[in-house]
Image 1 (cartoon, rainbow, N blue to C red):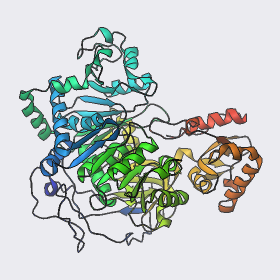
Image 2: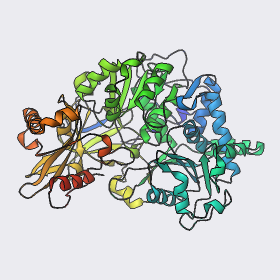
Image 3: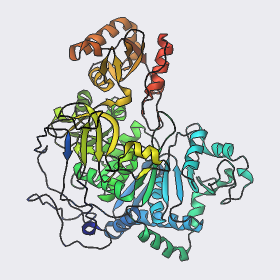
Length: 626
């Protein structure tokens, strides 16, 4: 059934709403809240759902938000303007909602002065910073389409991204780690140092006219503007133009382009609307108890990623929380200090980050007693990690979620209070207004509990891949059902279990083997810190199973390698069928040994090629992960 957009009931264009809808008999509105939002009271820990087939729709009486980021931040500035909402520890910055909104308006004014027109694409290229957050909202106020550029991109990736979306301007940091971004620009435009700022003429970058550097030493970057210089270009006669653009931008218009990780082929630019990302953040925030359980959120995730900018920054803004950036990139001790200093109640991260936090040698030096909620993306919370989060970080409630860039962040999220057997084996229950189904190869819905491809239909589904209609039609049908490419099962209560990526599946002697199932078992072993499973060629069986293992105490454990491999194999066979036990083990010491996409996904096809070389196996890689 089509999703109804109750926009007229929920517009932020007027100050009061005469009637708010919520779950019947569960109204429990707080005395103060940042928006005219609906805050449901505490409900049961899990829904009373009993499915017989793998289709679910989670209807809701909570209406949608119909607004844009520019109007959203202006509303917050008017209503809770004196509340501190943005803290960047490493830059020593603390800003109220009113100050932040003004900073976004000033930057939007400067961008208008550069001659950028509504609908022009502007990129942001850099690690987490206060300026990154300002740009996110300033682009909306100026009517521009913001393009998130991965900080790890090299020259070919940058060139592809700039030209694919015909980027008119880009705001860039000086670099990250050993990467010097200005050097990259020089390779693409050798005459940049002789060019006048704002008038770039490059054969390789024909659409790019403005490079704006996040720097305090602009003299080092000829041919570019500095961020501060653009802000200083604001003019009084542009104030009305910014106000006009803020009002004219529609919530259904394209606002944000985020490139998929692209473990195979070139990345695709997912075009997202304000309506999609704002409501994705809004309903995630509801599910996670935002406003009622959380006043401050620490954000170690990269903002360029959908989980960072929508699943953290935007949730914080909608619910009037304090968003705390501890460091430009993930640093465990910076996270600890931010939690301690700002008394953060919630933290969002991926499982690898959480493992680094709970195993950090200096953890005991910090007071983390304020923490009570952990949000985990990308996978269920393994039992051993759930226990460690509770015992070492004092976190009592953990919710795992499932989503993708193409879904504006998430379509499933756990319910706080779920029992451990649910939070450690599933990635949540559908968000409000979301439909989901699991289908077989013929497109038919499978019985409950059977494996198949997960499809979703929701308000957050992307508008499409930028300038790639054929690629869009491959995954989104005319009925707006989106094929995720993930193999999954639904429980009778409607919770999601991800089995693996369709292209990650190992076919061993005719048996389908799903890597995530083996990975979850090995993570329960006392010596295993992290694991990655994939297939390698085998003359007799077609494929065999290979496990890359990172140990808690590598130097000591590796001395008895043969015994360790035997113990790991026996451990797997006690819990899974014999054919699912790995044939090969490769032990590694550092996360840097594992090839990853810029957004942190394992490149399993590269891992397979690396394993074939190490193990002396022939044949070609039989699958690739996307």
